[in-house]
Image 1 (tube, rainbow, N blue to C red):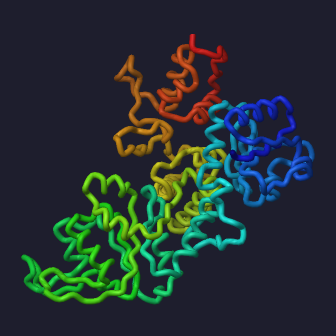
Image 2 (image 1 turned 180 degrees about the vertical axis):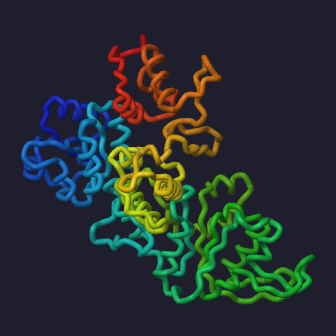
Image 3 (image 1 turned 30 degrees about the vertical axis):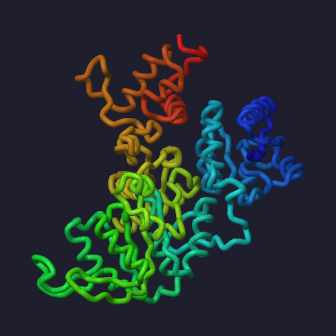
Length: 463
């Protein structure tokens, strides 16, 4: 059971929120101000603090520093959007606009607390969670990642790095190498998906002259090139079964035999493997060797998706903007509050890579000499992630190429379509159904209503 502290001066809102969270199996405490919260409660015993932005006495953002490692979720009215953005810069893990929907609040609480950031899994302050060169982020998820890398790097153990596409698996592999005793020796990075299946064995393990058509000379493979260093095999799930068998011998015997050779040579290689695929599923399907899976999964590092990294999203976005402004020789640009709202509420199915591309596009297309507006981000127009089963997750943004069903020839903008669809269907659908049909979250639906001035149907149920 998670412990949550509510800091809210309006007793009606505080009581309603307490009842909502209690019904969802949370242990809830209350306070009406920052001073009452610090006077009555020990803040570091909570898993989450939900604080209103405007409180009597000190503002709710003061809770961010006072709470230390405990995440703080800020509640604010839509009119206080700029203040909400400032709270994210100050370290708030997220914000939620009032009046909030109950489902929206519970979803936000689950997202913030999560398994990876619960008190049972959160690293102790005594553990080494200092940042790693090349990695940006100070969220609880990233601090846990830093701690794990610091612990694992000095060993010679094989490491499996998993995570969604675009989360930075190669950065993690480089960090493991740079903090290991092998840092002065080479790290050889191989993308198994980028090498044709017919050449992968020769590339990895080498070959003798004449071993196959086109083998005009003897060649050492990439495994031998990584001797005394680190071999990073990205997308190891794409490795053919024959190459998997050869790799297993490298790990078991510490030796490699080039194609066409009768002799093996000893190699001292530390393997770091990475994949975005489910290797256990591939094992069950007979596409990945079970014995190799257990050999590479000695130590496991899972990279958090960007949507679970809270305040890191804004820090990364601003870092990318600064970098691309320098590269394109533009004056430094800042993000408008509306752009920051879009960045921090979007779920980024492509993770850091997608965010980086969006920021580069925004800098290039920006016509202002001072600010990047949300219109330059084109987030809603990006293609969304497709699940393994082929389904398109609704929460990842509006589906592209939407048109009115009653007039297929009419070319509507997304904003026009959104407004017409809501006005035409809100009497027959509730908010959840509307959001699902539009392919957006309930939070995004509410925010767009506010921006476009569309009043919400308050009937309480579809007519």
